[in-house]
Length: 104
Image (cartoon, rainbow, N blue to C red):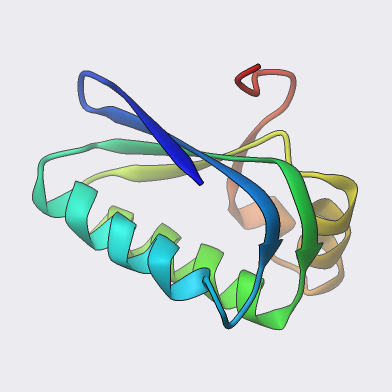
């Protein structure tokens, strides 16, 4: 996981799995950047290889956390496994997604 800062926007690139072993780190990072005044977190999910129920929980927690502090979560280029799961559980249409803008 890497993070870049551009003003009040944080871009977090995640590689590999989002699961019970590491998902809490994303929530903790969300809490930290929200407290630091970030108003947008761009979560680059283009390199995620596993995303299940815990990943959905993490994304929804981040979404609500950022909304509560006046910010927004943007999912950037969700990988096929992320997109599929978010669509299957019915939340894909409720989250802001940006396609074709992942960091290289």
